[in-house]
Image (spheres, one colour):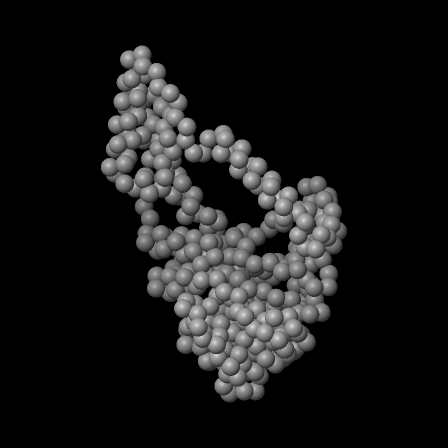
Length: 359
């Protein structure tokens, strides 16, 4: 058995992405030179690092549970931290061995209750059922027929984001397999029948050929008419697609991954935010950049339109910039957060502007 530091780094990188730490994942990826490795991310299954850790934990428990004569004994589950502490593992081995000797000597030990037993398992299912029941009345009490409930399968890696089309029953999704997909939820699929899906492959040009970018698709947004889909990728490009899966144009001016993108309310412009500390307004017809804003001093994480020309952006620099198309400086700068500002949203009436923040 052998493995390289690049492989370990890639699994850690994927774990950070899957856990929602996209910005930490990006920084770790840069420092560990993930992009320069020849690892095909689409071939790595989701939760790979956790699976390896779980197998290691099971192996450690198996070591403790095997007696001197090869007999297997029931042991209390180890926590992950306990499993990497030699003194704890040794103590558990001694406890199990002593219990085995007592059993052979005729002593009877009371079975120990431990977490993870049937009671906890039952409670877990009850909790899930209660959550499902309590959340079933959300969305204004609307009824969703049972025959429309389905699981959409097709992506070959983790799915980062999804968005409903505002006009039709189409659902778009973005994944770590370097694709976005458009799912047709108009007609319920019969049992065993897969939902119709369009695969939007994100490719880059190498040597005159289009090859898969092997980069995550982490942001997407429908325009107001529902006939255009914008996607943003870690390859640094935004792309505009039609509802039938045709690539309309590629927007390339960012110098690194794109973290967020939004259509304006009129559907004439797309706004993107990137790790290169800039935000860009793109013309949705020509695909040309109308203006690039470089007011942040660290990666821009999220954007939101106030109207068709005014927007706000937030960043790891702890600031929020309100900008307008055609203006060479921010029309307003908000400061006050003591950590990175991860997400923002305008009040629907555009009368007040509290940023939504998770830090």
